[in-house]
Structure formats: structure tokens, C-alpha cells
Amino acid sequence: MAHAASSNSPQFSSRFAFIFAAVGAAVGLGNVWKFPYAAGENGGAAFVAVYLIGLVLVAAPIFVAEVVIGRRGAASPPEALRRQAVEHGKSKGWRIPGLFGLLAGLFVMSFYSVIAGWTLDYISFGARGMFSSFTAETASQHFDDLKASVPRLLFWQGLFILATLGIVAMGVKKGIERAVTVMTPALGVLLILLVIYALATGDAGRAIEYLFRPDFSKLTPDMALAAVGQAFFTLSVGIGGVMMYGAYLPKDASIFRASGMVVAADTAVALLAGLAVFPIVFANGLDPSGGPGLVFVTLPLAFSTMPGGDILGTLFFFFLFIAALTSAIALYEPVAAWLAERGVSRIKGTMIAAFGSWLLGLLNIFSFNLWKDFSPLGFLPGLEGMTFFGLITNGLDKLILPIGALIISWFAGRLLARKAVMTELGVEGGLLFRFWIFSLRWITPVAVAILFLVNLI
Image (cartoon, rainbow, N blue to C red; front, side, top):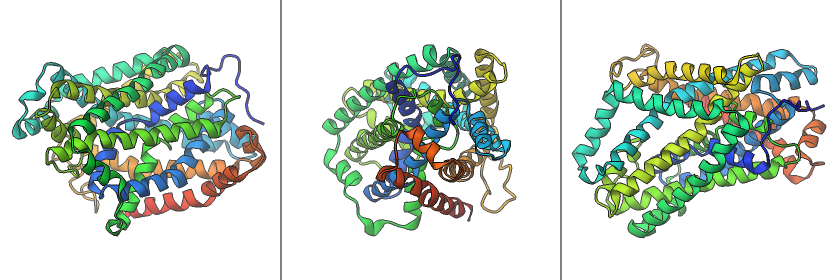
């Protein structure tokens, strides 16, 4: 039977609090920073179409599975997996994937906090009215100078980590729930304002065609794999944050309905982010496949030529900061909860998580300056010239997250008793349930395995 939450177990006050938290966790730099340039690098609308298919067939079923495991286990990811494995006569060793998920979350935060720190630097820059002074040369130079300055990177990274620590340390209701119920709607309002401005002042027609009129003749296997990988990455599955929030979801809330709302909101944000970026890109004759520099070099240059560019630029990077912060909360919470189960206070547990991610973050910071020419695994084929930052980001995207997804799909789709899962979902079968189980057992493992193998080749 499912483990009932004890009277001391924290819970969100409603399913809407869960939705705000889960949307905040899913809507992060993957949507706003990565999605526009990934779409730009892979042909636009054809990429978007495959991304949406991958979202429905692969990523969303894993998201639902994490919520199911989390709510049934009513504990941190390692403990939730262990409890349910023992309940079904399996080894306690199932907690080990949960522990790896906690560690993976700290590795994600190690580079996430660095990139989020960049947004704070740009907010400070825009608030002083400096975007208007950008030229093609100075826009690129500002970004290069930022990456080269260890003190600046440490300051902004530390500020972002402190903001995340402060929220998580306050607890589930007083900290996380209060924060996300303000910040997640604020994300939506800011994004809509940015989209309205971009469509009104930019090349709206070309941007809409680029994003929503697919030319499948341009579709390649690599593009399709990139789209499915982006769908998988954007929902933040495989590292425990969704499972942790599932543990806080009230028992009377429908998992399918709540998860559907999260997936829909996450998808809308990704597409709206494209509409906030590409009209400006096309109106200024810029390259939509500009890679990561699209956000930190190309767009600031565009802001310099636009009416109210300093205000728009500051709002844009503030939006990025909030998106990063709501996601970062979900990276610390599983660690803090797991340590709390072992008698460590929430404040100390959160500080341990913060210190761990800060320490790992030094590897990422130094990758842009002191160690930019150092490739720790350069002696291995395919890893030549890859810095610590490259190893961490690629290792997570191509190795750790796919393995985590395979484990979750196997656990929920094959290890848990079907009756127990139906009880947790509040269904007695039905088409949606059968599709979900089929996806977990067959579609998701095959798709993730292909992604995993291709990435290793």
C-alpha cells in the first residue's frame, strides 16, 4: 500500500501550489535560454514539431511517473524508491538511483548557478541604461569580459545561490510555496509583455513562419534526436525534483490533470520564448542559429537599437533570472529533504546542498578563464578540448539524465503493481492509463536508449 504521509510530512496547500512549483521547476533556462537557440540551430518549425511529439510520447509519461513515485513514497527520492521497492519485494538498493539523482541535481546547479549569475550581471547592466551603448564589438566584449572575470562570476553565482538557499531553507509552505505562487505567475506576465513587444516591434510574420510552418524535408536524424532530447530536458525529469514535489502533492489532486497542466504550461513558455526572441532576431538581420550567444550577445545588441531597449533588456534578463530561480529551488529541495530524514535541520541541509553546488560550480567558472585551455579527459576520443563545463553539461544531458529516465520508466512501468499505480492515479484503467503504461514500458525506454546510444557514438 502507499505510504501515508505522517502528520509531520510537509504538503502543498493545494494542487495549484504543486502546479506553480512544478511549472517553476520545469520552466527554466532550458525553455528560455536553450529552446530558442536549439530551434534556431535545427531548422525552426520542423524541430518544434518533433519536439512536441517527443514531449507527448517520451517526456510527459516520465513526468507523470515521477509524480506517482513521489506521492506514493511520500519522502525524498531515495527513500520513496526504497520504500516502494521493499513494498513490492525488491531490493533496498533501489534507493541508490535516487541518491545519484540528488548528486545529479547538485551538478546541474553547479553550472545553472553560473549561467543564472550571468543574468544578474546583465540586469545590473541594463538597469544602469547601458544596453543603449552596445555595438557589435562591445556586446561581444562585455560577454567575454564577464566570462574572463573570476571575481564577477563568483559574486553573481554566490548571490544566486544565496537567493535559492534562502527560499528552500524556509521550508515547503513558508518558503517554496510562497515563492512559487508569486514568481511563477510573474514569469507568465513578464513573458507575455515581452512577446507583445517583440511581435509589435519585430518581424512577427517571419518569426511565426519560422517557428510554426515546418519543412520536414530539412529534418535529419540528428535534428530529430536533438528535438526529443530537448523535450526530455525541458521538463526537468530524471533528477528528483519532480518526484520530490510529487511527495508534496495533496492526495485528493488528480496526477494526470495536474501533470497535464504543467506540461501544457511548460510547452507554452517554450513556444512563447521563441516568439519573444525570433521577431527581434529577424527584424535586426541577426542569425537565429547563433547558439548560446544568441541570448547574451545577439539579443543585447538588438536591444541597443530598439525603442526602450534598456527597459526591455532589463525585463528580459529579470525574466531569465526568475525562471532560473524557480528551477534551482527544485534542485536543492530533494537534498534538503533527504538530509532532514536523517536528522539534519532544514537550514543546515540546504546549506550543505548550497556549499556542494558552489564548490562544483568553481569547476564551471574556471572553465571560462583560468582553465579554459584545460581538457581533463582530452585523452579520450570525442572529449578532446572539452573543459569541465563541457564535460558536466554534456555528461548530464547525454548520460546521467537518460539513465535516470530509463530507471524511472522501468520502476513505474514494470516494478510497481498495476493496481497500486491505478489507485494512486485514481483511475480504473482507460485509454489514457493504457497509453501511459505502454509509453513507459516500450516507447520511452526505446527512445531514451536510442538517444543514449547515439550520444555515446
